[in-house]
Amino acid sequence: MARIALKVDVDTLRGTREGVPALLSMLSAVQADATFLFSLGPDHTGWALRRVFRPGFLKKVSRTSVVANYGLRTLMNGVLLPGPDIGRKAAAEMRAAAAAGHECGIHTWDHVYWQDNVRGRDAAWTRRQMQQAFDRYTEIFGAPPPTHGAAGWQMNDEAFRQIDAWGMAYASDGRGTGPYIPTVDGQPCRHVQMPTTLPTLDELIGVDDLTEENVHAHVLQLTEGSRDHVFTLHTEIEGGKLAPVFRRLLAGWRAQGHELVSMGTFYRAIDVGTLPQMPVMWGEIAGRSGELILQP
Ligand SMILES: [Zn+2]
Image (cartoon, rainbow, N blue to C red; front, top):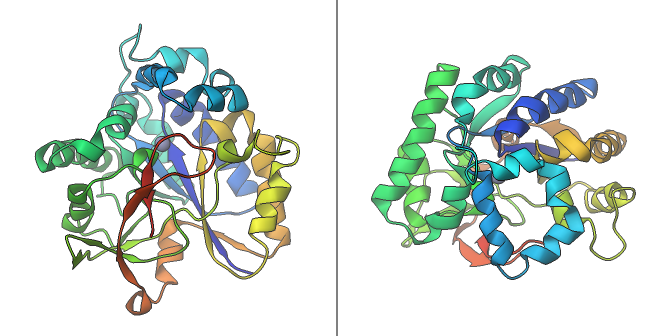
């Protein structure tokens, strides 16, 4: 048996309003804890339509049916419709996650803007984006956020420094194999990175012979044994069309004897003094287009 941290990325207004309540009931049915990371500012999902012109994206769209998962209205936000302010319109659903006993934290201020720009932006831009999310989170929850998980696994040096400046003890901003202390310019950060260690459902479905019907068995194969994991799910996906798959995963993990925990619980079981220190790197992950933050 092992620990599996459930990291729930909340990307859109629709995912906050509809996906959060759906996931809360699925989690409570198996008494699982999770960490909900919110997008706190404008929903500019429609800007993502620009990605259609990028290599690799069309292949992914045809595999995973982006329109079916995200909904046409969500995809139009910020294109023909002004981007709605998620933190203003769906604070009640956000607070409901905390009221149900789950840990909450920051995913981003403006998902699409961050994901498409942060790698090349300077310290001032980065701090401004992050501080808007921090302030809105504090306004909604009445307390500062304990943790952060970057949108699209996109970061820059200043963003890692800001996690430290906020005094966060742990965050999950990239992909990798297990907890480590990131270094920036050769200096170790004061927080622990707990990378996502398992593939996401949208990275798997459509590859080889994996379908909505059998993908859970593939993930459950990866979680056999005693190795701890961080699994990232999305309110727009597992809280929507792929809810049946997520229910099968939860049941399977229970049958494997795993604890299903928040990032905070996962962190408290780590012996921080023994963790390796390493700089992050950029690279690709199978089934996902573009580069993201990886553990070397
Ligand atoms: Zn996201």
